[in-house]
Image 1 (tube, rainbow, N blue to C red):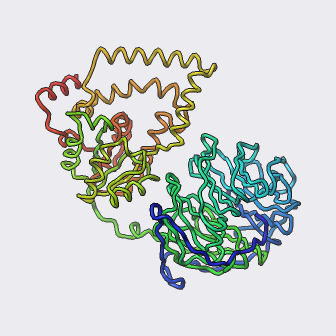
Image 2 (image 1 turned 180 degrees about the horizontal axis):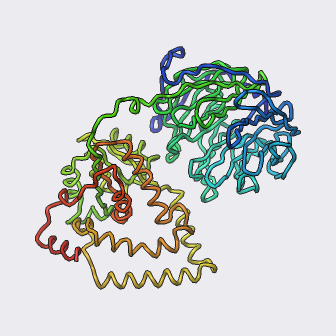
Image 3 (image 1 turned 45 degrees about the vertical axis):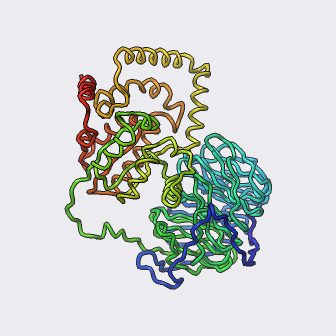
Length: 588
């Protein structure tokens, strides 16, 4: 990213396919006063010529600003808002990031990334990357950073807090700073010259897609929840939102965005995001839930980079054209729910229902009709289901508008396609997608399971794993149960049996597999379930997941004091006499 990018002011017309037509968002008038997010004081700090990326020290007592035109890193006292020092860094320092080892700096006029001491400015190490390194994205999972090389049409991962170079990926023409999901799974890199967004599977180390996003995309930021990427499309004066799973543009924000939007930064409390408009010299402040611009704040000339303090009280803006940093004092966002006087409400009720997925299509005991009858009898306010959050928007849109499903993940789940979604449409309960599963996770798991089997260092563990699996399988074969009987599925012995079966896989492979390991994936599922439970206090919730996960969730839920865990038995289909006998045998 070189200083003083020209802004293309030509008006453009959107040509969008009907099948993937995004929603165009409108906002309140620009001058409307929003009571909870209106900025107040604007402080100006001279930091050197053409300032770019801003990074804060761990304690946020210092801000480091890459002054590209002055060839230094400005050191600012964040309390007094005064320049303390300037650390000389020749050859156009554009990006700066704080690490536990020092300051990581990209030098745009070279192909180098350097680590310098944050006090003396002395060079600690030098990494040779690609031509014209830009700003840093991160750190994300594992202390990794991402940097784009504008002159090489590539981006690269930096490992171990910038100590070593990782995998390099081909991008489109002139890649600008990208962004990664919170788990470090996917990266999204906007390519300024060819109007595309490169999507990278960082876990499996491959470029998985390149999509058209419009004229001169200059910044991309994954929004909280990892469901959407907000892309600043500079040549069209809009923000476009791309779904992280389908890679489709789902909506466009135009009203309230100024001229030449350059990047998007999310507030640390994840309640608003900010867009710096380089040609209108202001910042748009956007409510993260409604995607409505609540204020446009005037700043210095050509705001090129931004950073938000940890407490969400200040937005720091590097203004390349006026050679200063502008600090916007942000008013606190009030949580309406928290502001209300506490009222007594019943404890949240939670039931757990075990699914057998494709087995529902053929089972006479736990088939589609029985699942539907059970959910109707339970009468949930909210259903927490095994659908990934990043796929839910498209799934519900497809079903509610066309009664069809294009998403391949939901097709093997008849309890959702044939029961849950039709019942939601009829009964109106809420659905919370709570599956941590992703395609990238499944690919990585398959790869690492194969590696585990063939890794000479894991030969002894593989032998032990295989032996334990055979012993457990032999024991269970001698003590069979009816696997599709809902009374059996929802019994303690069934859970104990499942835990035993999955024990070797969990013990020997969980850490080796990584995110898709048995304990790891259940932690991911349960984290989403926990968040959903907290969002619906006092309501009646039904968790519907594969029956194998049930024991893991119940072990966690039984420890909670904030919920009432319901016995699911009374809601299950009335058993036949033979079914009662099977259930009694299962409880022995």
